[in-house]
Length: 94
Length: 252
Image: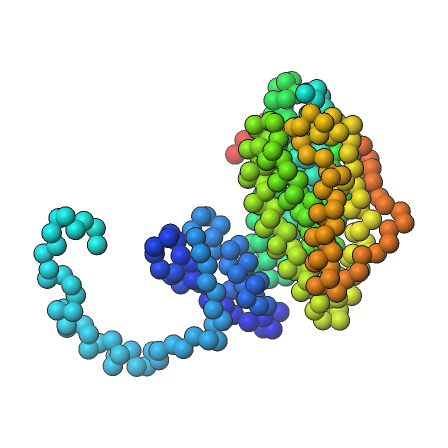
């Protein structure tokens, strides 16, 4: 049956101010049913304030075979991390 | 103020509807057409059963004989259950299950909405939670009814067959027992009859999108509110009560 029903990726925003995060996928006939299924499948324990669903077919993914050339060059560039600043106490949580 | 016997009976009608419909929905657990819907149906069941617990507990307090939610849910005889016949109808197929849910929730959403204005604080509390749950039950079941009614030739046929089968049981949703009438007059619970127009509008709007027609009902079915149930009720209670009757007072 699932063969005929498209796959959707589900993104949940746990709290206001945070970004939507990918939490899984599901099958549903259309976007309305996908949102309901996401609500029933992924927000049963109070995880969410907002839901996005995206057809899995609409997602372009990077090629695992290119992982080395994509990601390895960044490993030795620690200066890209903003960890070299002294943050004044008054700034608080960043 | 309605007498406590009236309030008790009216609360039992409400709680029994929720318990029996919740039990029916729970029968889908592990058997729904897709995993996502399996979870959705279990969620709906838990909303209803959770709500029934609060209502039974309050009914026990109102009665004042020391009966708790378990005594009321599991230790009564069939004729003492006052749920309407609609909620005990079998699951049969998915179309029938979703339509039964729509028929029930399309009344209970405005019912609990109206109960927010009750002069009884406990009922206002129960209504506050239930009104959101019922709004979702309407939305979820309506979307399925629309998709099945306006779906394939086979799904449309099954959906219309479900309408013909279930519609005669909707009239009883609006039945006002003496107890319910006394509570409505006292301002503790809403008048079901006053919500008929809103229910009909909801059903008409869904049916229009679902390409379904409301059948003419010549013989409306009722009796549940007087404790007269269909033969399936005994089977439900046998399963529902078995553990509590075998091991009375059992706790987890």
